[in-house]
Image (tube, rainbow, N blue to C red; front, side, top):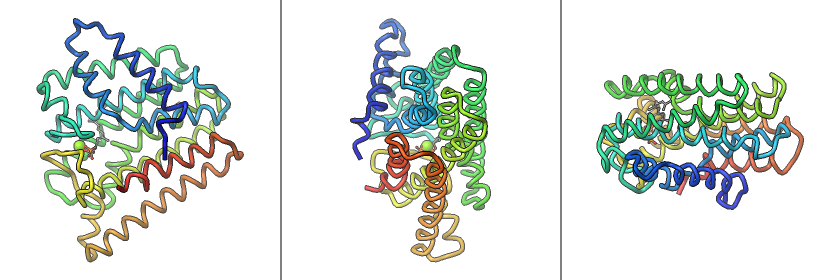
Length: 285
Ligand code: FPP
Ligand code: MG
């Protein structure tokens, strides 16, 4: 799928480039931020925010800063995750900690989080609160992840609790924030939040599965937490375990699609359906 040709992707890409351009050359953080943000991320979350807002009747202009804030906090979380996992490679290039050192990487993450707060400051309280809560959940989920690493594999319940918080919370916040910007009814916000969460859960299961089967050659970390397939291997043959994982992914995607199908047929809904595929099945090489 050619998401890079979508207007939503291009607008986020442009906004990101202009943010980096605007950082003072004398600011030492610039090279770290530029290294991380120019690594060619898929920008799934901000595109989902823009599409959710459009689904609720609002144009890109009004939600672009919120989308950029999501992309920046996502980048910050990956920088901090690589610090914790002692990651050396991400998106096919050296991680910030490997290239610039632990301190510079940590501070670049802090810089990005702070910028995202500035970007969100003109928005309504609901938008900002949703974002803040997602950040807290991500941190909580990452703590669970670190705890799990010590004695992996963890239980299925612990696994889902962890990925719902560390990963799905930001997907859920993206779609809910889009709905809030579109001044949607409470029920609509809640449905779109649920949709985002399901995509986020499926995304992380697939990401973990690919890492387990070593199909992700553009990533390398010293530490990695238990994947769902490893948990299932405790109860079934490896092939059956992999199958069980795929069934679970299909379930989340099916439910996500069902939520979207409650909305009227439109080009925007079609894009959300396509990005649901792209973020999950589409990651298989
Ligand atoms: C990647 O997981 C990491 C996350 C999805 C979340 C990371 C969150 C934090 C470090 C908390 C920081 C919070 C804020 C608000 C900045 P992974 O290690 O399983 O995936 P990977 O293979 O991509 O590294
Ligand atoms: Mg990691």
